[in-house]
Length: 400
Image 1 (cartoon, rainbow, N blue to C red):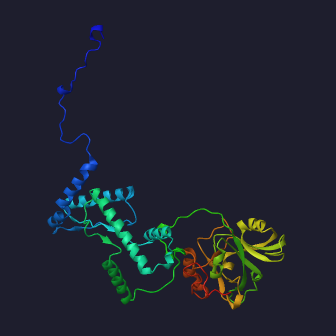
Image 2 (tube, rainbow, N blue to C red):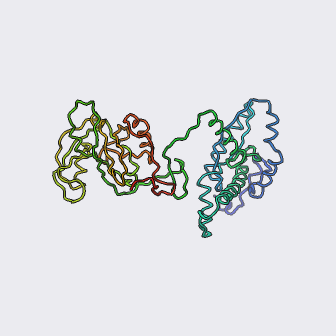
């Protein structure tokens, strides 16, 4: 640059360029302009016009899993609804009558829990609130958040029948459910049965699998001896030395022992008969007692129990199939007099425990399924006792 040009004013060349022109403001002023857009969409009533235009077309229905009416929408709700809006609009343009009807799930623990939080903040006890009053508060709470979420979804531009959504708390929906249930009953397809479910002793209600979160914790465990009481026989076999033995189970839920009705083992695991030769403690197994363990777990189990032992022989699965044990609480207040069969189960492993699984069909899905599928062939009473009430306490039906 020459000395003469230093400090010269730079020329503005923008007027020499063919730049695009627009009426849109450089800064859109979205917060100020959005209410006008929403009102315009409302006044246009596109949904009703599309329904009238497409009333004779083939219907396309999108079954929409509803959100819970218990808070503001989040990014997951937004993604869900935007993608579904793209589907329904696309099907409308492809020539279908694609009427999207939004809905809300207004039942369940998430809503009840919010009301209970309000009670706790006020020092109120839920159990002292009349059930009808509690339900009405849940209904009012759900309706409030339904209205909030509806406006939030409308702000996203989602097209749907927002004036007539479906809700699980609508009285006509509840009546329809009762009507359909009655149809099953009248046709003989409905029966009463038992099945273990996840249960909250605080809320006194069943829990959905999706509501369950598992955490790793350290827990105490117990070994429990089940004396061999009988061996099924064809009549010509000699007395089995297993008649003097005990099947040992290991569990972290000792409170379910009164509900035990069977023991599970695996035909894919090797088992052995062992004799205790010495014991450091005065309690537990003593010298001379015979115990049956999975061979892979015997040494570690005896070491933990501070016992010395010797292995007597292998116990094949065919022999275990013939075993009927006595319940460890047999005779307590004249109770627990039933036989406890050994059932071959796929869920049994020799990675921990004893290789035998304590089975309480009223307290677990695996226990229930193996009991229902295999116990019937053992000639035992198939009745599943209800020994724990809704609050988590033993019932009066528990002997002892």
